[in-house]
Length: 117
Length: 114
Image (tube, rainbow over the protein chains, first blue to last red):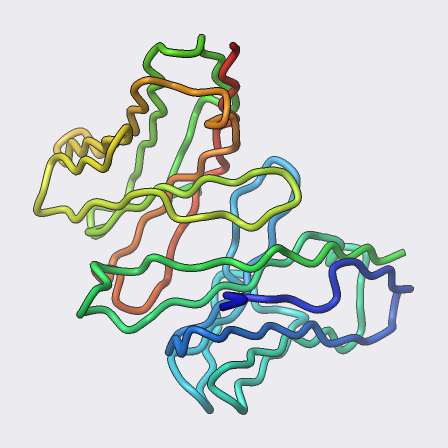
C-alpha cells in the first residue's frame, strides 16, 4: 500500500495563478483532510470531507476550494494564488471510528511545498 | 486564541534518559487527544492517543498522561533514542475523534543526543 500520496511535491506559482493539489489514498478511508503548516505554527485545517461527494470548511478555508468526487481522491484548488498561501500543504485520511480505530488517527501524506511569488 | 499550547519550542535530552513533552489546552469540550511525530520533509505520523475517560495510555516506550482538571497532557518517552529526534505535535478533538476536526499545537522539537 502506498498510503497517502500527494502531487506535486513542490510548486512555484506567480500571484494570481491557479493550481490544484491532488491527494490520493489507497486505504479505503472515509475521511480526508487538507492542512497547511506555516513556520512556527501547528497544522491548520483548511477543508475536510467525511465521505465521497461531501466537503466541509475547516479553520482556514478562505481562498481554497475542494472536491471529493471519488472516495480515494481529495483535490485542493487555489483559484487565484496569493503570497499568503505560501506554505506546506498536507493531506490526511482516516477510517471511520470504530472497529480497529480508537478514534481519529489520521494518516498523512508527505506534503506539498508551495511558494507563491 | 490558541486552544492547544505547546509552550516549549524545543527540548534536548541525553540518549537513554526520559523525554517529557508537555501540552496544555483551554477547551474543556476536548475529549480526545493525540500525539504525532514529524521528521523533516515528511508528513506527521500518529504516535499515541488518549480518550478523556482515561488518565494514562501506554504503548511501548511511549506513555501519555492526561490531567483533565489541569487541562494538561504529557508524552513520556523512556528510554529516549536518537531516532526519536523529531518535532512532536499535540492535537485535540471535541468529537471523540469521530470526524477529525483536530486542533494542533505548534509543536516541540525534540533532540536526543547520543
